[in-house]
Every structure is written in structure tokens, then in C-alpha cells.
Length: 178
Image 1 (cartoon, rainbow, N blue to C red):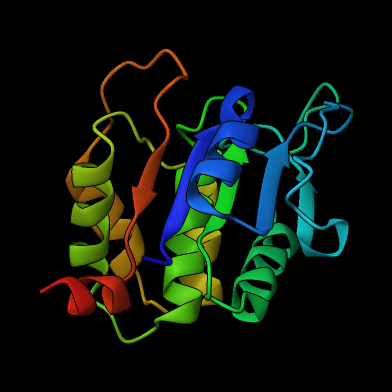
Image 2: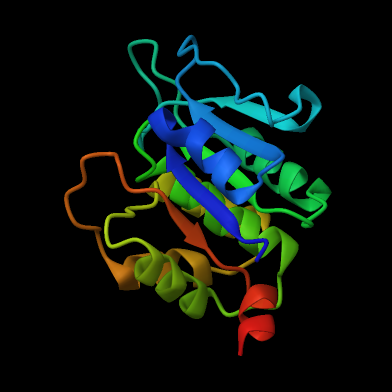
């Protein structure tokens, strides 16, 4: 299975090793330092400095922007898909699930947005994708509101403690299982 592993920061090394990840996307506030797991090559690691907010940044906070989403899309499209990709943020609840949805649609654009959102909810009862990232992703991927509607349809996730990594399977993976 080459799906997308979504993780909180504190479990990235464990998840990278457990799932054989070699590529990683990090969505953390600028200046939030951490050690990249040794199994992730620096050339296959994209860091996006963004806060988990859904409004234009104030007080030094950086809101998700179109260029952040373009970075996610480009990184996903360059993913070789022989191994799972690891996507993480601080808690693995908002920014990284949104990025996982965007990445999944970037590599498999013909899939149904509502089915993708339902797979996300099945994989994680806690995921509450960042609405601003989702909106920019919807636009950048020409989803015509379908991704936004799909994410709204699954609603807010359950309260989380930031310790619940999960795997978002790709359509390709589901076809090999069934």
C-alpha cells in the first residue's frame, strides 16, 4: 500500500520507519524546529512554514496561501509512489489532513471528492482539515467546489490529543485490495 501517512510531529520517526516512507511533507509554523527522520532524504522533504489558521495572518502568524498549496501539489506530483508519503503537522489533525486530501487529488485527479472525504473520515475520526488549505486546494486543482463541499459533508472531527496517526489510502490502493 502506497497511501499517505498522516502523523503528528511527535510520531514522524516511528511512522516513517514503520511504513517505509522516504518522502515527507511538513506543515509547521516558521521556526518550529525538529529533526527529520534519518530515513527521509533531505531532497525528498518539503517544509511549508504555515500556521494552523483559517484567516489572513495577523500578529506574525502565517495563514495558508495559494503558493503553499502549489507546493503541496508539485511535491505530490513528484512523489514516486513506490512507498507511502508522510505528511505531518503539529497534531496531525488539521493542516496535514488537508494537505493529504490535496496530494491525493493531485496524483489521482479522476477520483470522487466525496468518496475521498469519506475515506479520510474512516481513516481518522479526529481529522478536521484546515478549511483555508482545502479552499485553495479546491481552486488550484479545478475541483469547482467539490472538495470544499465534500470536506464540509464530513463535518468537524472528534476532539483529539494529537497522538493518532493514520493512513489515507489512495484509490489505486483500494483497487489492489478488492
